[in-house]
Length: 417
Image (cartoon, rainbow, N blue to C red; front, side, top):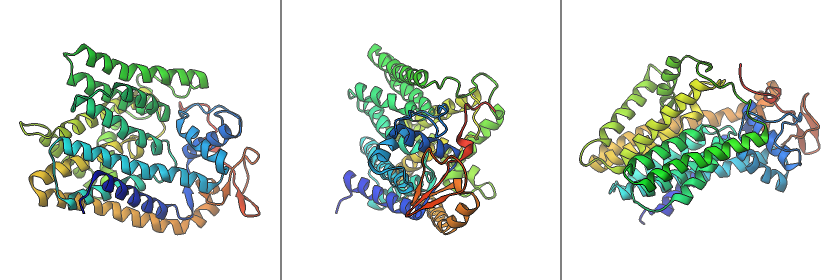
């Protein structure tokens, strides 16, 4: 049975959903950001606008992920299982869309690796997404939109197709889901413009790709009163520029392999070296050039964003998932086309850490009772229930429901220090 694009996408979705279910067997872990999105969703669904349960405006996070969750709340109520299922479906959809993108890039680049190599790519992508997006964050929706945006850009840059409307429309959604979407916009615009720098039409499309979504993002921020969400300016970053550079380089490595004895640094260094080597030369596959250029441009844009705004967390984790998602499969596919055993072997090695983490994090689900007892706001069980009427205090059992209070740290008016 041939491994068609549809079958690979379905396999990726199935593996991602199975892994996600194992990681959320009893509920979902929460931090302050997660509570902000969930409170915003419940508030939108109950007619209170994009606010915390306290009534304060949500300033630090764009509204699209909460708006998506609010549809689920309207249909089924503000239960923990609703948040888990709504986010889980996004994870499955992500896996299917990323495999479709990778398949398109490989076919257009004349890369025809073996079925075993494609299965390894599929498993890696599925486990990577499910494992590194365990918490409810806007990245769950952002990484649904991003492969669609990238496919539109790919069709314009490589296939010379007309996908202008789709590219700009998807671009509008990126920063409305998460502010780092601006980095993806900038990278996409540069690739579109650079690929046709002699064409006024292409340069105009590149400008529109960045300008229209940026204008929509600014308009929404003004409408929601989010202009004071972060301190902005040169030198206001929480960490020094050199420290951010180190974080940006090492962060992706920690999502690929466990950070032991410098393995994360070695892994990301080897990945960049392989990607750059495959991107140059007469026979360089377009997929390698496109993925490497996009990742480099996004990395630079994210570095600028973190240096120009005060952001509490360092660069890493959910902020750099794009890099392994693109470079690991593309490098693996390109290597497998030249040296099948080498490419497949390297992909198999990189699947092993994802399997290890899946096992460790799945076993951690057995400790969720202890976690919930110690810090109730750090976990939302399936039977958990959150409303504006219970802002603080211990969980309250109400029949089959457990009324829980949100994380008080989510009640913020900005993010400057």
